[in-house]
Image 1 (cartoon, one colour):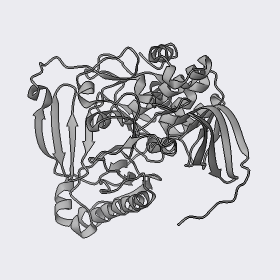
Image 2 (cartoon, one colour):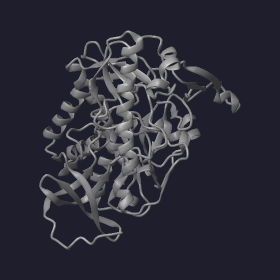
Image 3 (spheres, rainbow, N blue to C red):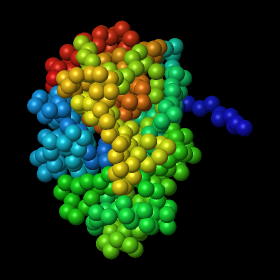
Length: 444
């Protein structure tokens, strides 16, 4: 069934050179990089604050900015700049860890991102939802929005889809695919009290009483917040969070599991465990992937293939949260491979390099080229974020924040170059974009 909406005029709320839709770090860094290059930039975010999963999702970990041997810094730009700001406020802990090198206070991150917006005179719209778009052939001309002022539009010469799920790409009918191994989301929270060292035993004995599976999870400290721990103990399985009904269910079920977990600890663990803060958005790992000119491949990443137009350097391992059992699989550049099951962390280990007959001379980092951002037809839009075009293994490595931060900066730089040269994104030189990133401190 359908209803017909009467025709009406939509007021234009703002006119920009570049509009970025989505205010996670990917979108913010795209906006900031473009603004620093001289564009008039607008940024739209549906939540009350910037930072996305790193902010309102409470996931307070970025991976290392160095190669796998911790000898050479390979990632710079706004990620490194933000770490320096966090240092000044004692809001970060740095370690030589492969996957948890940078732990930060999400609240301070939000404040720092606010500062970037103000310093760079970016027009920000919070509590503002994307509501559709208008096109002229293969070009986007305007994006429709909805907020406290009602419906309005922003016109721009260039657009970046940083919505995570690829909402603009969806409405442009760009071809997409979904993995049958779609990684499940997790609802994160901050907790007071200690969960103790006997989680596996507690879950085995009492988890069923509270509707909790023996699910793999993780946790950590929160810099600057005494006696508070970050928790991501449970997934929400069998959901596609690009669907409204599934997303609603996932948010509710994620909160239920968080409270069930602390209730179990109080009853059987003898611990003073209480939820101090709940994420205001579930940590979505994967939904749709949109086709672009290049698809990232697991083996190309793991073997460190190089590109002259590389826009991303990374070391984060292949990291696949299972959607069919309680496990997680890791593959490292040096060949190590392990699958871990449940709170007891039962492990199955191997070596993918040895299995392929490769020698012990492993890559120190991997790259992806500019063409991973370039759609096949739309001339003035780039998708930047977890909707990226990658196979299961490559996505498991690229989906994390530090990698997506770099894609955001590259998209912002490409937007500037496209407008400066009056070219479509398909006609841009990836080498020129890499050189611009280097000139502006975003690439090494």
